[in-house]
Amino acid sequence: MNNSALAAAVARHWNDSIVPQLVEYVRIPAKSPHFDPQWEAHGHIERVILLAEAWVRQQPVRGLAAQIVRLPGRTPLLYFDVPGTGERTVLLYGHLDKQPEMTGWRDDLGPWKPVIEDGKLYGRGGADDGYAVFASLAALAALQAQGVPHARCVGVIEACEESGSYDLPAYLELLAPRMGRVDFVIGLDSGCGDYERLWATTSLRGLAAGTLSVDVLTEGVHSGDASGIVPSSFRIARRVLDRLEDAATGRVLPEVFHAPIPDERVRQAKQAADIMGVSVVRKYPFAGGTQPMIDDRAEAVLSRTWRPALSVIGADGLPSIADAGNVLRPRTSLKLSLRLPPSVDAEAATRALKRLLEADPPHGATVRFETDQAATGWNAPATAPWLERALDAASRTFYERPAAAMGEGGTIPFMAMLGRHFPEAQFLITGVLGPKSNAHGPNEFLHIPYATKLTACVATVLAAHAARAV
Image 1 (cartoon, rainbow, N blue to C red):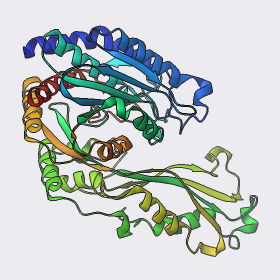
Image 2 (cartoon, one colour):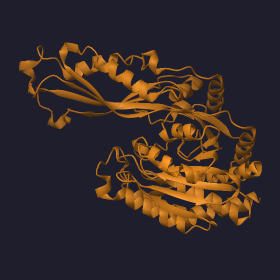
Image 3 (cartoon, rainbow, N blue to C red):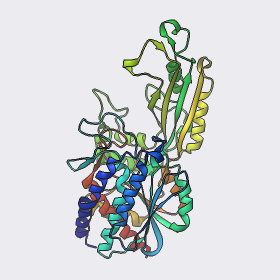
Image 4 (cartoon, rainbow, N blue to C red):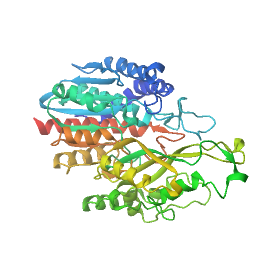
């Protein structure tokens, strides 16, 4: 294989075809069903999956077959199949649904406004991870252009990932007989510690999410009349959350939400911290004099990848400041997102969380926790020697630096599902969400040069897999 020619071919594919498609993809507000319950009527998910399917069918990949698979009442799924050598199968994964808009975008940017600046494509979804289907087919096209063998490759591109992939199990069950024996999984929905090497994700945290509601009145009343007698729903919510989190340190208190950290992951965290340096804790847009919760870099990596953490990500019952009268409010509702260590069972954790929050409500108030997501994390199996060699060789070839590995703090429910379906498979979970790319937040961007090199890396790893499998 001519690596220089492969890199040039991938770069042309990105510049001439993939970037224009991603620009159009960013324009479409294809919010995940959790954020757009009327997704089917609005048609945005249909638009992005049709856009991707049309592009896939045009690719110069021999034997490529593509199909939009549909199950009643579920988001559609794009499936492709490319024949190859040997008897085993590679599964390539991505998704097309997006997070909601979020506030705080630069005045000249926006979630559905694609802008290319300094090699970055700004807008929602390009990096998380609309690029995946395009990169996967570009990698295969580059290999075939040189006649380099690869195994059979199937692609699963879903449209429900940002809602917890609740539609995916039904599709996996439907497609399993067609996929056959999958012994290698490539998922392009993760992050990278910097933009200077290939990063492999070794673990993903789980998630327990839901809405905590506290009701104290049937309607709001004058605060001058009621305060001091009627308990504040906000104060009760605070007291209930104190059972879960130490407000002074942010530590999640119940041990049921913690898990031992494997020695290998501790070593990888130290290596990642050495590579990333101060950016481990300084890559975030801190306001004013805000300081990180932890200064030790290796411990910071572990805190965001192997330790539980609570975020309050939304609220109802609180009027805007401009509309806030002197009223003691009848209800406070808080949307909670509790990240879990990779090895903690999310269903059991969610049940424990509900019991914890609803038990013995202060002042006899009505306290409810309604769950909406429970996704178990994922811890990668030991990396096979052939894959470890292939990752490092690819990184040195296209980035001129050795590969690195670390856990990620986000959740990809698909990975735990795949781990159960294909217990003997090897995994390359990687992605382009590096420093300041800000997935789910304002000013999200795709680093185009990094994604281009990552595509070339995927191609060479596919070649290494086929050479090993034959």
